[in-house]
Length: 467
Image 1 (cartoon, rainbow, N blue to C red):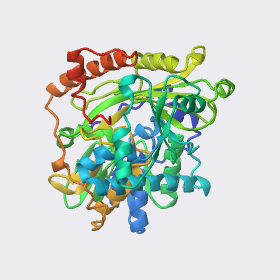
Image 2 (cartoon, rainbow, N blue to C red; image 1 turned 120 degrees about the vertical axis):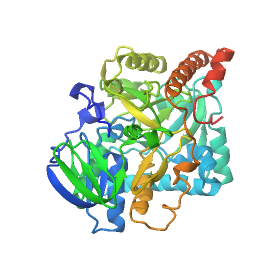
Image 3 (tube, rainbow, N blue to C red; image 1 turned 30 degrees about the horizontal axis):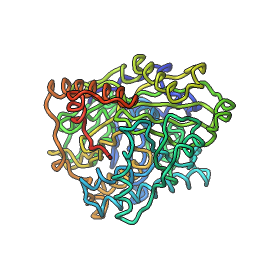
Image 4 (tube, rainbow, N blue to C red; image 1 turned 90 degrees about the horizontal axis):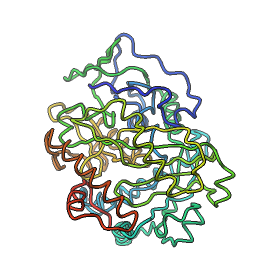
């Protein structure tokens, strides 16, 4: 498998630098035997290990993590916690409306599970369920939520309440967005604290974790062998939970593309944020194609992100997906547009992260075509904190060969999913579309119309508009 470009200490996210991480577990040395090997120690891998042990406590599960648990997307995201109801239209296009309703409700249950883990002292994750504000900051963005709101009403789930300009300004301290909706059972989390908490919980329940153990090769068979630089694990089942790094596999790369997301964090300015009325832990986003997402941390920093980063060629990505000064400057400009009062506040952290995307914007689970004991899950498209607990259930049921709603979910099965064009057409096309989306955003945020060719190219961006 392709090896990740491990981020320099200075390029790690604010979240990862903020935690007092426990010492790394021992790298794999020598030979071991397991029932299940999980490649990847992020949310998907950790939740899968926990779900397997919930169903089959005697299972010997080994996690191999290339760096430290949570060092990938799980420790680099914006900490936004919300259900799948915002994507019910896209999910129902894959699985049908009734299962979409169930899966969306499952994410609400996942959020409740996170709340319980925090309340009972199992994981300190800074979870604050102060709502998710889905807003518009230009005429073109208005009504982006209408399809989701209508479908949730159809299935009897009225999850969203309308917001007026004064509501948004009172909650966020900004007048940039002026209309929207709020999902109340949502909020924010400290992503790295959640990842490290899941790691601690998995270790306590008997999962064996080897960090700093990048996988070099997987030898398939009735019993698979997973090799690292200094050891090997033989196992009956393999789970590939490596997020964007799954693009290294040609079979999966046909359905998976990788883009960067860029995030910055300001110095702590709690008094300033209090003075503009931004006091709680709501997650906030607008409705650009290159969506802005942001939160106020418990310590009074602003964490501000944008899906505006690099495009990977043939699934290859390196250090530019750890930090991108160009896109960091772009984020700073947008931060100051939304919050002019923060112009004099230092930006203390600036990082990037790769996002595993599939055209449907809905994750997919399956086993490799010729290897029925090697499973994977991919395509979270940047929305995973409340979704990966469900991924863990699906993968656990597949691994344990259970016949239940998880293994039989409409999310299982790659053959029904869209394939992407081959390289270099994919990369060249993606760059053209990305540039058009950027131009369209720049025009629309000023309530101007983009050009005809720009609109035509931007419309090719995967994922259906929610409007």
